[in-house]
Image (tube, rainbow, N blue to C red; front, side):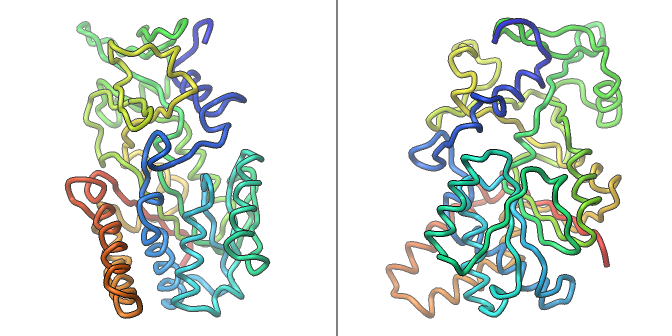
Length: 340
């Protein structure tokens, strides 16, 4: 990139510009730059599907609710949810609606093709370009690893106790004295002296709360409930991880060609939804969330219906999701509700 921009502009262009990393279809998993819970086991989406069935049975949502995924990539997560919903309660497939919020047309085409391959004409997939376009009476909304992909600024308090933020000039990061009110207020509120400041959480939460009268929103991401006052921003390329300030890398070689991300401050997410009018239902590790949603019960159902080799193969994949020294503790789940 030529010229000088804020790091949040640089981050946003890296991922979302016309030739950005997410603007072109990328493989996730062994052949891609990174793994996700979705690419690790279909029981991740299946367990969230069970959550949908349970809250319908409990009466919070009706059988005519819309199931919405935000940032679906290929569509695997929503597809897994649908297949498990069908297994647990086939009648719901006839009444529920299914939608994906996806800004990129080429990904919408991929998702439609995949759903056609999985379900034929049995499932009609609705697409929205942006969450601001959604207008639903009731919905279950799910997202996996989206908050770590919101543009962020980098901030640093120098030896003179002056707050600075990062700009990028010709693919080189440098810090200048802060003149941004939002950054100053954020750092004061969350006691941040060094690290990332996400942009757009408030607008996202407001759009969701304004456009859906009644919903449960469940999202998984990596991070902590409080800032750790250090830089977590990093780049993934072919399953290699490079800290943003790694002296051995050249940003111009990785720019738009690799994934860039950072740890989520979940308190910022929670505060944004509370301000918008939603109630924070829970915050817990991925391990605890998937167990509470019923992943063990789903494995027991599988065990009763398949041979031992098939069961063990799937159980080993689930272990990846639950491993407390891996995904199980590193990833967190936070959920919200609006409406009684």
